[in-house]
Image (cartoon, rainbow, N blue to C red; front, side, top):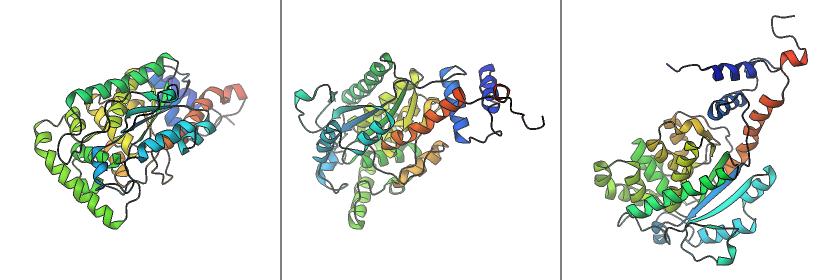
Length: 348
């Protein structure tokens, strides 16, 4: 049985005594309560909200078995982020969100002059092909997790208490599908979607390749089903950094705006290491990528938005932020029945 604390009661009283019928603001009331309990105050606030996009390449992408776009698109999109031309740039500008782009392991040498616009945490030039070997070494996996933690710790030191997590990496829906299948037990075919838009023939090829990869690592993961082993074998540098980011943000009691399929896969890994991590999380939307709805159902969480988006980049988190801000604002700025002189039900 969950214990009701004095803070819980105070928050519920503040929410219920605003000038509205009980529950009339729906999910916003739930979010206000969640954030107050997370921050340990009846007056929660959001400071310096920032979207962090981790980018990395995947060895399997070079085979062409799971993706219609060449691996080089990862680097091209990172440059697009830096130039301000991607969807995430548009939404961050619109909602006054900070944006940090991280080279977690892109198979490209970026111009050193880009420092200040691109955070370099490159752990390697893309992972290995997990159809043939583990995607990363244990040392690389740990280093990438720690790098993700360092990014979030730095943001927190600068006053940020709300992060949105995003990613870029050709082939990373395939890693997410495998991670999801190993953790949830859902067959890999049911976890696999079309990613960046494969046609029917390519989709069958992708599912076959991922089933082969699943079987290739099945015995090793059965022997050690821990999140670090799963991540090392079929993950990616950006997914490892996302996992570390989630862990550090939860440790610091930051609000985590979870984006879509890939970021939720990272959260599944982080949750195995910290089962209470979802207390910090707002699941921004349900991606149009096939497995995401099943992920959210397995986690028993409800996404804030249903927009049919499946872009990644943290775009769902950026779109959800104004609703989260509204939850904080109504709690702090909306009049109570007493302050407004409005009669409550039964007091006429």
